[in-house]
Image (cartoon, rainbow, N blue to C red; front, side, top):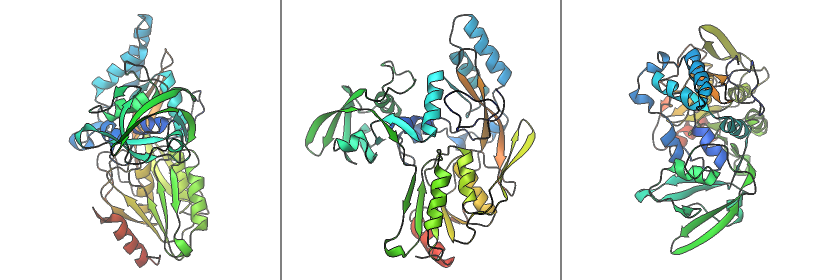
Length: 405
């Protein structure tokens, strides 16, 4: 299997696919279950590696593809798990971004990067005392139809307490994984899951049936009376994100400006990040990247809106394809970037199909912004570094650019 990995593949792995940045397990865990936590909450905080403590070793410690494939082949010949053997080689290499997927997991990953998932439509976080609390409810999903609301406490899933459990374990139960906690494809639509809930002094039990839900990863907030900037929040770059942003740009007032909110965006399809950049650029370079020393480039399409005032919001949860987009708009002078430094994930992965049908996503290179800046480990520094009150400051900056306040 050749070529950097692309997350717009169909269910079967496609050879020679176009570039995408790998998202590790943050997006895969959350969207497919409907429990993807916002910003640093829950699973996102637990599955993202601590890049600040690892220095620049990522560029030097890459898993060797031949070694991974050889270990998997030998394991299969011995009647063992090729995926497990490959994972052990990756772990020893120190490559924190390479990952091994079982066939079912990879199919799951492709599905949720297409913008959909099977789940009950809940986002959860861990609160004080180890309690699991609902932080967001998918509109129109099974949880909303059952009357579950933000702030409700999730006490148990299928009779197993959630108190003190890692959010990732709660996610696994909501997915319908094996009782031993092993990862695998989510349960099918229509399968039941029983939730024990609490709201204030009220305790009750709801049996929900998982459903196929369309993720809403682009949220457009337009001001009342068309006075003020349009705010576009992108939580992940799944299929169709670029088209949704282009529609928002066409409908935005050219005098009021736009806030592009990438805070907590853990990445996704780089093709969609480039399509989003194309909404604001009239062609030109978006990023360069290398694959084992071979230099390549990504370009925006011509015809984007280069006039609407634009401010981009970022934070420490802005990762991968979101950093690529923010860096391109910053380097090209198209936007003012406001917020806190970004996560720092700029690695490129290549998929390899192993003998048992599992898939190894192995790091093969890194991308750079149009000015040549590397992102991995270092992240992006905003033009205006702001902690609390970043959105308020962003609106002030936007008004200075000629946009509304």
